[in-house]
Image (cartoon, rainbow, N blue to C red; front, top):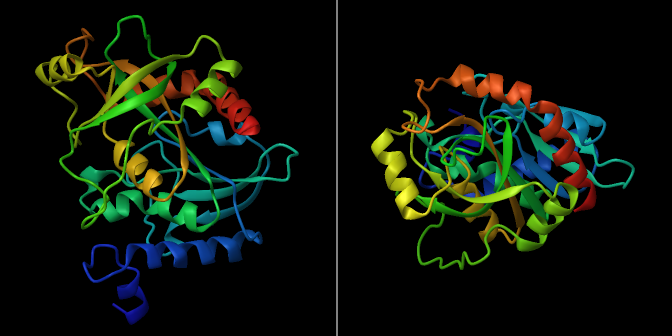
Length: 279
């Protein structure tokens, strides 16, 4: 491993994750030709086509060309990031086609690296999307739900040392209200993150519901904490891709997640584009 590669290795305890984020932002600026981006979008399972409706893609970068990033590890995700014009506003969105999940074993620093790189690239807002299991029977597959709060069951945090961050109103009430102006039918719910990669057991789903959860998945909460630390305003949107274990009468599968996302792509893409255009 070269010295430069070592500096950018987020699994190395000696690496400075914020310095790696600055290095990533420098590459993003160079490859996109703009000094700053305004909004970051993290496209989770089922949201892959949503970025196309935000605006024209002006530049595409392979993740592996940017310090600290890796290729996509989940089927249905894209291993690129894009610089997208937000309509005709003159603003730019930095659209991530994938994320690093905690269950990939690369550590929490890698999980939140995209958020820190987006902040270093100038973003002041991040939209976190995911595909998830729904705990409410009325939320059929293909239903988008705003995240009002979360429960982090990973036993991990992106914060290091004596770093105390207030998580009150972590998911911006202003942005949630904006989204509900765009689509008044949007419900809200509490998202519960498990470590994965196995799906939750029916007993774990009952536990999540008892704790106050409405949605279960394997992403988002660690990114949201890092985004708050970086001073970003956060909007979280889940796509219910399946009923959670014990609520669904059929076994869960990742193919089901992909198919539900494809079926809801137009609605979710338009919702995301309209909201981002107003942020």
